Image (cartoon, rainbow, N blue to C red; front, side, top):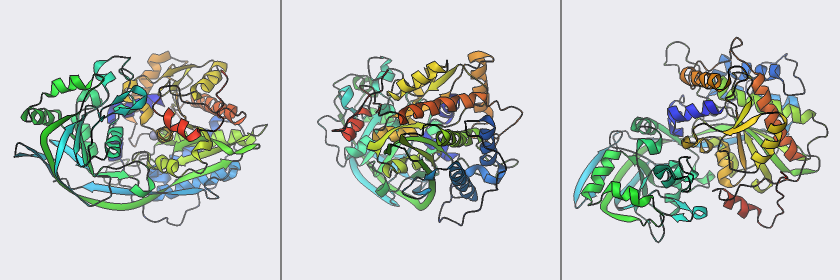
Length: 573
Ligand SMILES: [Zn+2]
């Protein structure tokens, strides 16, 4: 999975970039559900390669039209997942319902929008796309900002556990904050500063906007630089043009800015120079502890017009009740949505998404089957959540976390499966964002027994941990494990694994060619990945362990607050 995810990140990086590739999701009302074709397949009680393939074949079939949210492919997908959960013997997991409706707001900014930055009474007009990008997630068709003073806030980071606050002593109400991408550790390449080259939560552009909103800013602009962002301006430009997706503000706990965007490096440089500031010197200052924000002699004015459309899609939730602690749960998650059908494209224009992510959905169904037949039955409950709108910005998982079927302080942890490798058996497993929580200690015990090595993803600077559905659980404080297939193939080793991963990324990732192929798929490795993922949950459901975030993890404070006064038992090593 991580090879997939990685290149996903390397190629399109920003989630928004993935959004751009999505077939226009047109969810409106819930139409009558078609009945999925009855399967004659004889499902086994254990995790089984044949069963896994059977699920993938159905979910990634042309009949499911690439599982685009709001299309007939959605109806077929969610009905199939529900029917399989019923067959396995799960119960409806969302307060007696199988489905959880996820509302979504689609916002398309006027492409002719301009932004005015005034320095010393001299206005300069920045054009959308070539000089800057700007948008709103406020759900408002008209956003007007007049003469908002600019302040340079370094990286725009407020990280108590790092003793770092770029907003210290500053009131940004009504102001526009201007900031750098990534974090000081990345730019200085000092492993003792944040996490060095490895991207932290604070390096993500999404975090920077949320923090600016918490601080009460009117707008936020990130200065683009290619190494810091890990992608060029084209990716920013493409991912910010066209429709953007968000939850409605009233169903999302995250604060929103009236307007947010990016400036090109060149525009920023000349803006700073005109304001009598040296951007390079300020970059250096921002890398040092104790950095103080710098007011700029400039203001921002903006009239932003957007087209707003309300839509909806569905998560599917099945539950296996625990025998002695049914109120506590382990969550398995996999997104069902993919990019749909693109009728305007010649040739095969169905984005089947067999690996991404029919594989993960099939995986959690197989794990559900194993739990259902296990003796003794699990003591804690197990929740299987197949979320929607991952490709539109992790919205289904975000909505679930804001409206959990089992309270988050009763949720022991979450295991996410997204894009499993079908290249064969490996000697290893990938842990994305390795070094996050004690869930990894449980996985380590499992992996040792299976003689599998554990390692972090190969490009931690891309911040993979913050780009998949489990991240929404992490942000809310729930320990989250993102397990991926390994790289070290038993046939051919790491070189063959990397080659296979690159081949997928170059030829099938987010393309119509991501389909099931009996001739080339080797699913023995998937079975091993699923066995490992299942064993972690099996151990947690048979104990009263409450794995915790490792010290200094940015999400630890949220969990500690949530669990205050409750008995939390750490796993025994
Ligand atoms: Zn995916």
